[in-house]
Every structure is written in C-alpha cells, then in structure tokens.
Amino acid sequence: KGFFRRTIQKSKGAEPDLTCKKEGSCEISPQTRNACQYCRYKRCLAMKMDPNCKNLL
Image 1 (tube, rainbow, N blue to C red):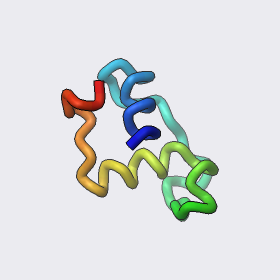
Image 2: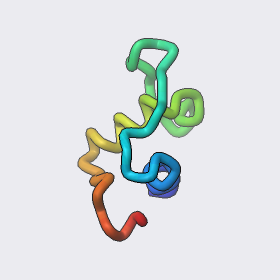
Image 3: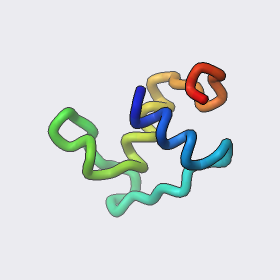
C-alpha cells in the first residue's frame, strides 16, 4: 500500500508519469519489485487498488 499511496500523492490526481524499459512486461516479485515502478503500479491497479480512494490521500 505504501508504494501505491506515494505514487498517487506524487502525481496529484493525474496519471503517474512512469515508464517501463521492457514495454510493460516486467516480472514483479518481492526480489524484483523495485526494478520497474511502472509495472509495479500497473500490478497494483490489476489487484483492484483504487487511485481515487479517500483513505490514500
């Protein structure tokens, strides 16, 4: 939750300005989660995390 919350707060309600070097196909695991913020953010969205949730802000 912390990564997702910080990403949303930094973007101030807009879509976060993140990019992926591997065209969005990075593996996200506990060992590799810090390698690609774009894929990590997309994984949060796939897990139904809501960027509009009032509890995050």
